[in-house]
Length: 176
Ligand SMILES: Nc1ncnc2c1ncn2[C@@H]1O[C@H](COP(=O)(O)OP(=O)(O)OP(=O)(O)O)[C@@H](O)[C@H]1O
Ligand SMILES: O=C(O)C1=C[C@@H](O)[C@@H](O)[C@H](O)C1
Ligand SMILES: [Mg+2]
Image (cartoon, rainbow, N blue to C red; front, side, top):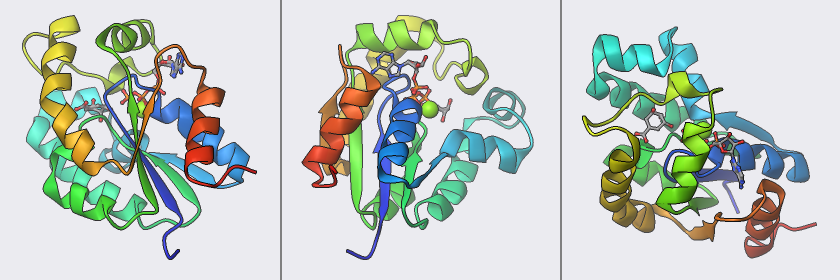
């Protein structure tokens, strides 16, 4: 298989950044977080990009950064929750070895992101609703898009990150 890049997609808080690290450790591959790379490219936090330049500017930069990351070999790429909104990125995802959709319920997502202070600067409000209503609305809007992109879907509710990583590797035939 030409590509050896695995992409993780899914809503905020579904565990993309966390699971990427478990997968990389088991495979002895690299891992990279698109949100971190976007912040490095912009020289400021995602919250600051949204506040100063707006969501469109953020999405434009995200497309550029993700395009490059998905060309990496032996790498797990954790994408931002909204990266799949752009057609260019959906097209690029068709070139990678697998696109794994990490799924979680609204309750799980809510618990994970509102209890997670470490990446608060990467999760500005995306709608005027904010909070739980934003999750409900955007998850419903995005579910068909994640479905379209994913070559593998994994439920993450009530599962530990190591267990999720193991399930992914097994389904992809990469378990050691
Ligand atoms: N399977 C899990 N079980 C319990 N907690 C988890 C699990 N996966 C991730 N978490 C916790 O949930 C929070 C969000 O996880 P993480 O940052 O990996 O999500 P993400 O999908 O990368 O989110 P974002 O799209 O905002 O970057 C973190 O505090 C993480 O430790
Ligand atoms: O769901 C989204 O649209 C986002 C998720 C985060 O990973 C960041 O990429 C940013 O906050 C936007
Ligand atoms: Mg993340």
